[in-house]
Amino acid sequence: MLLLGGEDVERQTKKVIINQARLSIIQGDITQQSTDAIVNAANPGLMGGGGVDGAIHRAGGLAILEECKQIVAKQGYLPTGKAVITTGGKLKAKYVIHTVGPIWHGGTKNEAALLASAYQESLKLAAENNLVSISFPSISTGAYGYPVAEAARVAAKAVASFLREQVTSIKEVVFVLFDSKTYDAYSSTLEEVMTQP
Ligand code: ADP
Picture (cartoon, protein in one colour):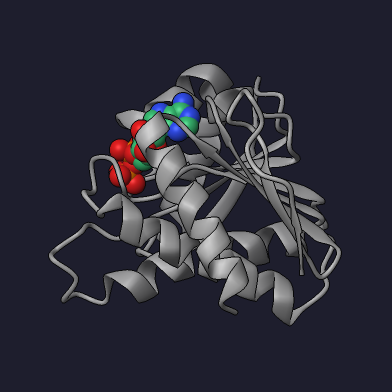
């Protein structure tokens, strides 16, 4: 593991290399990312909603919703911790991977394992589709109420252990954090997780 520098002036770059893949964090809008896939913090009905979900559907257009409808018609609501893939529609990203994070209930409802699963199932799907790069938002820390510091730790550990355990097509994972509070939480966590394997 190699720790590459700190934050630059734009609070952009904190990155680590794990098993030939780069894991980094930036502050920004995930709908503008040009990774092969961006991940949507969806809800089980896959019909769009508020937060990052609404932003992705607005920016990507109706083609995404059409595929989501077909998926739900075929397999029903998406369970928490699982993931599905659709077109990226009008987005720069070719694909959207929709996953459902857990609603925070105080930590007694298996939230950490479900959140880790949301990240790992998304990565698995990206690898199955031979994707090279993928961006994640901070799943569950908006409307679903997961405390940011704890969610950041779960997210960084889940991604780092996926990358450590296997070499796949995925060479770049980016956490795209919308606000500075979320960015700061992921920033401190990334170092913590990397220095304590
Ligand atoms: P959840 O229901 O999983 O909590 P939300 O969309 O409510 O999902 O929030 C998850 C995170 O996504 C929050 O940190 C929120 O600020 C952030 N977010 C909202 N819009 C965007 C966007 N366009 N790009 C990246 N992150 C976003």
